Length: 233
Image (tube, rainbow, N blue to C red; front, side, top):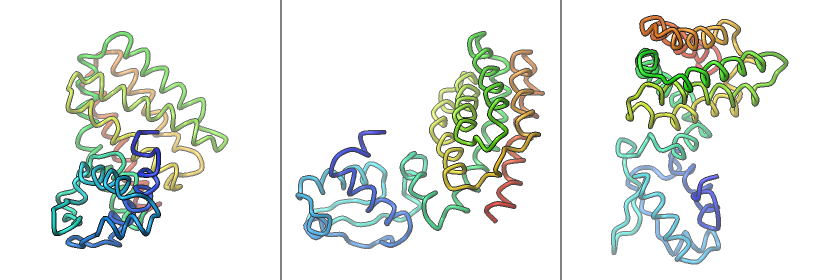
């Protein structure tokens, strides 16, 4: 758990953050720190700490004599893992899942192609291990165990690309994969074809076949979009 989730200000964030991202406090709404502190039964110093975290996410801005103002959605740090988590927990889930999956479709195939060119022997071995872990947990309604290997697989691909910008998207991809599982936007068992594609991506990266790694990963992300059409229309 991150430091954001600990302590009294973490309790405030767990309630106020989702309320803001769900639109309960529309952009332009002014929140009074003293009123919020009273509502949450915390000290004003705790409330100020919570507000500072929300400011770091660009969800709000605090100005003297005005108060804490909710910022427009276009200004939010939508790549922040906690913001993603809050949005996936609300009514915006279908749109958020699709937006994130489209992002994956744009980035991950290219990252896989680069990984085939730049991955170390250790990363190739790790990718194969993750793919085999996915296979081993792809039956018997073991989605939580499957998720661990799925997240690790995609992190390795992004890191192995050798592009630090792609690598920093590892947390974003982890949140969308985790959110799909936690909010049951998954079939009871993963699509066997998708599982096989992950194995083949690992093989293509190990074989240094960039074009094949890219195309196979594009098939994975296209399949993920098709699943959303069924499970989160």
